[in-house]
Each structure stands twice: as C-alpha cells, then as structure tokens.
Length: 263
Image 1 (cartoon, rainbow, N blue to C red):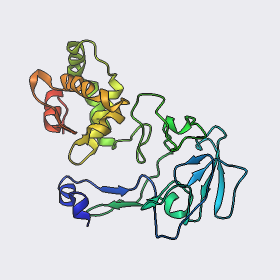
Image 2 (image 1 turned 90 degrees about the vertical axis):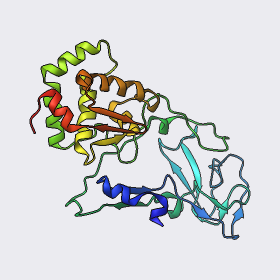
Image 3 (image 1 turned 135 degrees about the vertical axis):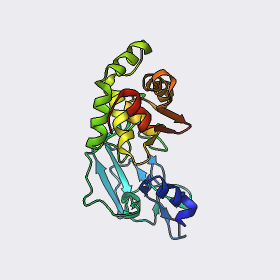
C-alpha cells in the first residue's frame, strides 16, 4: 500500500524520512445518519445557531473559530449531518475529525529524541467569514509562504551546515559576487538560511516550496529569487546551485572549491 502512495525506495536512496499525515479528519456515511435542519450552516457538520444546541453537539469559541461571533456549534455524534447525504463528512468535533494522524517512516537508526516545534499559525486563521457562509473559507491576508505543520519560524540547520554557510558569506569571493550581481531582492541572512538548510540535508537538496519558506517568500516569487542566489553562488559560471524543476540542489564540493572553504 505504501509503495502505491509514494516512492519508498527513492526516499531511502535520498536519505530522507517520509512523513504521512492528513489535512483533516473524515467520517464515513454508514446509512445511519440523520439530518438536522439549521439556519446558519457551515458545511455538513457545523452550524451557527448558538441558541439551539442539542444532544450530540458542542459549542466551541475562540480566535480560530472564523465566524462573526467567534463561536460555532459542531456535531460530536458521527450520525449527525446538516446537509444532504454524502459518502462522508468532515468539519465536526468527533475524534475521527479532530485527531489528525502522523506517520513517520525513517530508515536506519532513529534519532534519540524528537524535538517539538513551537506552534505556527497562518495569518488566515484569524480572517472573519460571514455567518451564513456554506463553507468556512478564508483567504490569506498577506502574500507569503504559509508555514506548514512541521515548519518553524526560523528553521534550524545543523551546526555544521550553519558553520559552512557563515564561512561562505564571510569570504571576499562572496562579497565580490554580491557586488557583481548588482541589485538583488535577497538579504545575506536569507541566502545563509537557504545554504544552511541545503547543507543540513543528506542529499543537499530541498524542494522549491521549502526554499520559499526558508527565504520568506510566496511560492510564486521564489523562482526569480533562486535565480539570483544562483547568480551569486555560481562563481565564474561553475554550477554550484542546481535548479531542477521542483527541487533545489547544492553541489557542496563546488561550493567549497569556489569559495575556498576547507572540508
């Protein structure tokens, strides 16, 4: 089954761990559900009639409840629905809907400890929606790469990767490359962050989506930014940064040679 979902052997060859998770929970229609009529409905399993909370329902309140009142009624009983019969539903408060599974696959010896990251909340969690909206949808308030479940505000690289990146940025060669590149949209700290992350991975590569997060840019702007990083790192035309579709690769040997960094 896992082989059908992703290339396990490819992940093993690249030295990558594979994380499988879900964007939301789901309950299956087993022909036992009952429709309850409500006026202000959010999808199939939530409504806004706060004065009408029956058995199998619960009121939730807080800044992440994106309604005008900051509150909503969610179905807890998995046989309750507020719309027509479907194959399944989500948006309620049953365990199947609110508990998201995470499966981590890692070859070889597992790390001694797992490090918990601080919460990362997208800006659009706090955008209001209309009470009669059929679906709870909110648009991002800023065009920037939204953090994912496993991102931190400042992704940490290994000390070795960070040391090499710092050495590169401290060289006269790097200063000359920045001067020759002219006006670029990136700061030295952004280039250092990308270099550190690339050097911290076994395959010396990250996805362009991950690169966007590291550079603090929206995915639609990362292409031009990566070309500017490439212009700085590819000294005298020798390819150091490789842009291959959805993947950004670093030739560490070429980086060290071009910038005079010892192994």
